[in-house]
Image (cartoon, rainbow, N blue to C red; front, side, top):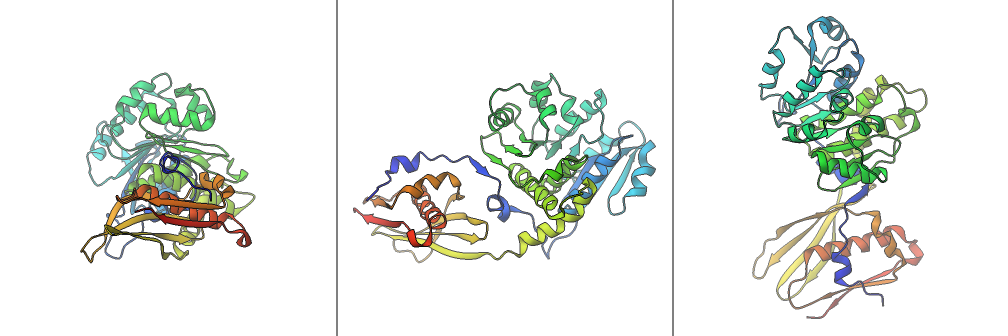
Length: 394
């Protein structure tokens, strides 16, 4: 028998994943029958001039992924251009000094985006600082990142709330000079800045300040086209506006972006992407969720049950419930884990066991061992399934 010591299980601090709906699907905002457009969030974008296309594509993406309202604030000279090209997106002309500050003071705006077409100017930098001062969710892209070249510390000090930055390699290098591979550099930048970093490319890395990271693998080569990054920013903005966690919103936006492009195929233009998003969301919603009791452990002190959800994307949202002695009810323990390919090395093990001592075992260890069991069942051929045993030592 091959035993996995508790010390080994406890040491598996998983913080890196391949980007997959299993990580964030249950957290995706969904329209509710009791809701309205205001409860679905209001996204505010800063529109540039004369580069007007970038912000318009971002705005349409934010609306397509579910933001209840989307507004673009634009220089007065550009108002007719934006208004003529947009229908459901509202356009607010900035006629005089103080107009944008008045917009920021409106608490109904739930997330902001600045950067696409903004220009690398002192005015853009000051506007970024104004937006960050609200401490509401903010997405910084393109010029809103470049204006802080050699001023990284100033930007980090200004970040007070959820913030996502979406640089490509060149923009990243203007702010950060960390050595190492792409994953390490993104992690270091997230830690230094306090923002979620989306380091774009064929293998986009999403890194959180706390060390979590995902690597995206579903982006087709057709995304290498002008404006696709602006659409990505809009997708993440739309999720932020609806209240989604910044790291999960970034991971979900990146994946949906890739899935939409893959569905279109060759000949993709960035303006095609927003209209492809509903089909991707529909596919995510229509995949059935089946609740499954995975493991049941019983001793004379407590009853423990481990359960989770499973669909075509894998196992996720695992949790432990406990029934105290003499009680008929179950209490959910606050532990959640996601199955990760890191456990693939355990496919070499033919048998696993967990010793349960008289004292209550670690719920964390129970979850991780159950996850190993699930991964082994998924990865091994049906005719060569490993055995999994619980052994009572109480």
